[in-house]
Length: 115
Length: 114
Image (cartoon, rainbow over all chains, first blue to last red; front, side):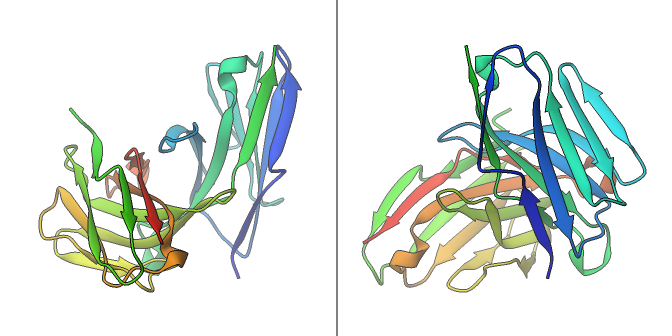
């Protein structure tokens, strides 16, 4: 069966360091992968999308990589700040067929950035 | 531009009661989704719709029904609530184009079934 795993439930780092979150998947051939941020009591908010034929995407302090051979995506936050503390979700999307319109989400990793 | 709104924000039901959750979006999105999120877990897809008048089952559809009579609204119904349906429910919407599939989420409805 399809499975998505995000590295750990919680990640604690010091302010200024780079946070690296992992999303691994099995039995899945995603067309693209998305990363979302979720703050307590709120709905997820989109951050970045990367397609299967792209290796890397950047947006300000955020960087996402996608390795379809390893079946893994890495999400990096450089120069992390306490305001980056949140839960980060990865989501995989297949394209077309019976999976059209459906995303599968990982359980999320809760990042805490300490001052 | 309100984005995605959900009604109500909180609700407490007794076992066996019924209720309808309303989701509305003003972005002219074709696709709409209902998810549930339980503590420490990710989002699990309940039902979704790829257009007005069409719905499809997601990962955990049992005990729920949906309707999409208008493009901007997506209703989630619980006919006979059970304690196992205690959860936070999120609605989302997106464009249909594969290049624009980013989902926009509502603020959530916190449901408790006693």
